[in-house]
Structures are given as C-alpha cells and as structure tokens.
Image (cartoon, rainbow, N blue to C red; front, side):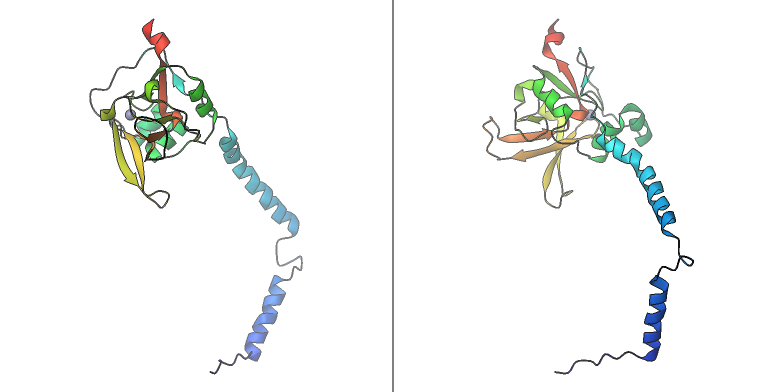
Length: 210
Ligand SMILES: [Zn+2]
C-alpha cells in the first residue's frame, strides 16, 4: 500500500507564515482586547433581558368564581388576535405547542387546589375536572381522563424525535399537552393527560355552588 506523499511547497509554507503573521496580535491590525471586552459587554447587555424573562416567576393559573360561557362554535382568531387575548406564555404554549417549566409555581398551585373544573384559557371550553385529577409527580398537572372527551382532540407529534400523542382543545385547536398510556398509574384509565396548567382556567366548585 502506498500513501500519498505530503510535501510543502515554498508557496504553501509562505502561506503558513502569512497566516502566523495574521493571527499574531500586534496591536494595530486587529481590535485591541478592550474592544473585544466591550463587544462582550454589549452582547451580555443585549441578552440580559432574555435571561430575566426566563427566570421570571410563572403567572398564577387563571381562576374565576363562575364557569365561563361555553363557545357554541369553533374559535378561530388570527395570530395577532391570539397575542392580544393571551399572555405571552399562554400564546407560546397554546399557539406554538410550547411547554411550561416543570415543577413550577403553577404545578404547586394545581396540587393545592380543591375540587373544581378546568377550562381552556384560549376559548373557555370545559376540558378537565378535579374528579380525574391525580398526582403523577411528573411536574405538570395530570388527569387520567378529560371531563368532556368530546372537547379534546389528539394527534401524533414527533417534536422530540419520537411519537407522542398531542392533546389539543377541540374548539380553538390550542395545544394543551400530551397523553401517555400504560405507564402503570393506579387510575381507572392508566392514561396520563400531562397538561400545561398555564393554559387552564380554574373554577372552584365551592364558589360554583354558592
Ligand atoms: Zn380552547
């Protein structure tokens, strides 16, 4: 077996030495270090608000004392109208299939809530009830069944590279979360509707009955 001979011609060596010259800091050809530090500072200043947004506390789950009126037809809004109606986090989840942070304030709030019903924050459709709520310890609100199955549609997505069953609101087509089957939870269905609490609206029963 023969290997190709590697040889440096004077031209290529000349090239290397030029390269050396170019990469050497001589204080004149290239930006002096303080300028690089300034660029870094400008970049940090630019991304700081984004970091702050990510660290921001979650808004509490919308709660109201009376059940909202149910939509009689599909709710179809433009993206601009949705942006006006929803909080940025609700928009990200409902309209862009986002996911809220696990184990966030919403999840703890959900665990503390008494009996009641859960409605879509996008269109007010009744989706879930505390009767089917259970603690899956997964970090997101969990139900083993929808309160009214006809208000839920499911679809398969491959967002994480494998098939998951997406759960959406039938009336506004908003993304709610996913449903997982056969995980061994001791519930009547062994399904886990893993739902973003940010896009739910809670109406407690106690106030409901007053
Ligand atoms: Zn909806």
